[in-house]
Structure formats: C-alpha cells, structure tokens
Length: 233
Length: 301
Image (cartoon, rainbow over all chains, first blue to last red; front, side, top):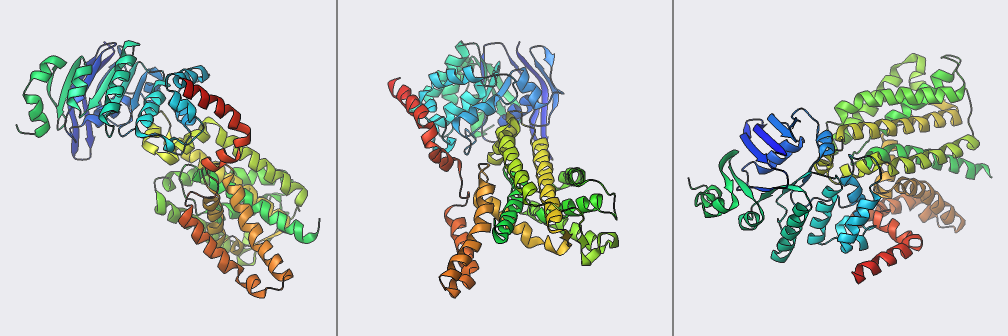
C-alpha cells in the first residue's frame, strides 16, 4: 500500500471540514475522491500533503509521516496540483517548472528538457511569463511543474475545472499515461463521469464524511452517488 | 567631476541603496513604509560606534556593526509585522519608523532634536563602489532559489507552500536583509554629510523610496535602480533644462508635472516600468536566437 490515511480530521475553527476519513491507495492505482462543493475534498488533499493542519495518521509507503512538514513530504514523493491551475503568472514557464523542483537538490535540467519535448507549446514559451499561456497550456504547465517534484503520488485537485470538453479528454489521456509510467494518482473531481472512467476506485465525500466507496464500476451504478451531489438524503 | 554632479551622484547612490532595501521584501509582495526607521538606525548606530563619544571603532567596523544591529532589530520586529498584510503592513512599518524617530529625538546622548555630528568621512570613492556592490548583491540574491521563492510568494503564497516554500522564513529573510541594506545606506549618509538629525529621515523619505520601487517595478532586480534613477535625475534634469531655456514656469512647476506623471504611470502601468516581459523584449538580441530554435522545434513537432 502506498498511502494509508487513517482517521484524518481537519477543522477550521468550528467548521469540521474533514471528519475522520480513512483512505488507501495502492501503488500505481488511480483513485478518485468525488463530492459536491464544500464536501472537504481539497482540505483532505492539503492535509495529506501537510500544508493544512490535521489530526490522524498518514502512512506513506509504510512510514508514518503524520508529523512531517510539507517540504519533507514533498521530498518523500507527494505532490499536489492545486485547483484552478494556479500557476505563478509573473514567473516564466521555465521558472514555474523550477519551482516544481523547489524541494530537490541537484540538477533537473534534463528533466525539464524532457518536459519540453513532451509539451512543445511550453518549450516555445519557456522565457515568457506564464500568464500568456492558454487555459489548456496552463494545466499542462501545472502538471509538468508537479512532475518536476519527482513524485510517487500525484494529487490533482479538480484538474478539469474550466477546461473545454476536448481539453478535458486530453487531460484524462495524460493522467492515464502518467499512471502507466508508474505514477500513483489521487484525483479530486466534480466531473464524476470522466473521473470514474479513468479511476480504479473511488470515494464519495459528503460534508467531510465518506458516504460511499468502492470500485469505479459499482460507484457508477450506485444511485446514491447522485444523491451525494444533490444532498437528497 | 564638478561638485554639483558629485553631490547629485551621491544622492542617486544613497537612493539606490535604500530602494534595494525596500525592493527585497517588495519582491514577495510586502510593502514596507518603514525605510526611514531602518535608515535612522543605521545612521545613528554607525555614528555612535565610530564617534569619540561612543565606542570609537574604525569606520568600516562601525558600518558593519550598525548593519548587524539594524538586522537584529528588523529580525525581531519582522515576526509581528509579517503577520499583517497589505495596507496593514504599510501602517505597521510606518509606525515602527515613527517609534524610532520618537526615541532618537528624546535621547540626549544621540543629540536629541539638535542632531548628532558624525566623525569619520566617507566620500564618493567609497559610496559609488558600495552602491555597485549592493546592486550586484541584489541581482545575485534574486537569482538564487530564495529569490525565486520570493517571487513565487508574490504571485501566490498558498501555491508556493504546496511546493515546499517556507513562506514565513523567506519573508523574514527578505525583510531583514532589506533592513540591513537600508542601514548601510543610512551609515553612508551619516559618514558622508557628517551630521545627522532624525527629522531628515521622515515619512516623506519612506514614501519616496517605496515609490522608487513600485514605479520601477518589483518583478525584476532592475526595477529599484530604474525607479531611483528616474526619481532623482528627472526632477533635477527638468530644472536644469527649464532654467537654461528660461522657462521659469517649468522650473517651478516641475514637481506638479512629475506628480501627474506618477499618477499616469500608476493608472497605465501599475506593475512598474520594468517588467519581466519588457526585460525579455530588451534582452531579445541576446536570447532571440535560442528562442527561434525552440520555436522551430515546436513547429516541427
């Protein structure tokens, strides 16, 4: 098991955002966390990364990392692609990629070149501020930046947000490609249909609680999935 | 060099050093309106360490000790001050400078309101090389990993955290190192004019320095240099030109025009004169070939 989250709790003052959530991820799995706005999905990811205070246990590759700082967890192989792409707009494309490797020592030039080869659009704009990129290119940059952290587990927070249907398809193709190359993926999505097509398993969060979990196939057929979004139960 | 030009050059050098002191925190989005406070600390500390009434140390050691003294104070106050944001940080740093001025004016040993004579003299042959050193240091500082982190914090603090940037540490370092540069500027001021008084380092000075940085642009290390040069040279040059052409209205009204120009600049170019894009465009001669190659690879694939 690559990631084993046991009883994780996130509170913002009186708001109990994540309520004792258990979640596991095997190596090379794609797991999705579904749920409506405010279900606590982003807080869960930030708690796993260590950038949000939480209680509970997080085991990564069998090691208890609960007390670790975010930089240490990133160094161990966790990375997060934040919601809404959120690249550094005044930094150049190249500098954005360098920021991905912020926690690493040593030369990452060869890896950046490999990214440029994979995404020629980024290469063509390497010295321009990232603000000139289109929405799709920004998402490519956000994912590339995360790849430069050399992660074993990539957590994506609603990557399809604000992308056109064609770009969403390309995005999921890319995610599956990365997964085939050996990356384990934890995917937060509102786009239930696309997420369950790519994912092996899924969890459904509602107001901080896991109300449903199982293989993608069973979730797709479960009528309670829709209810969790609409809040009808 | 004529005495007039030399005096203008000194003013430009000091303004540049001050500006880099404000630029370092500004690069991560922190607005520091306390320049006068740090300059006062530097000027008085160095004068005291050097003077016969104080510790009587060699001038170079006095300047370094003053920087360490100011740096220590900046480090300590950075923790409460960096808890504030935006306009509240402007107010907090402004308040700090007022406290420093208030203390100096009330301490007899520092000459109180009458000011304090400074012993050792430093002239243009020291100040110009020091200024160049500060500029080179700032360019180096911004090119490091920490410099990149500061700029990423300017763009988005929360995302910077996701990539392992320790936002608090980066901000404290930038604030403290900036204060030390301003201390250096203050010391050089004291040792050049050999007389300091707290009233010289007032809020108008703090505002001007912050303006140099914001108008010059915080995205690149060129910004403070361009801002400081522009603000010190243009009003003087306008006066020179106006007077030699016999245009008294221009000589007298130049600050009004200058003010209007600043407002226009704020409206049409809020990110400052020098931006990444402009730097890229100006450096085009140097980088164009590399880019063309990349564009071609992009087109071919």
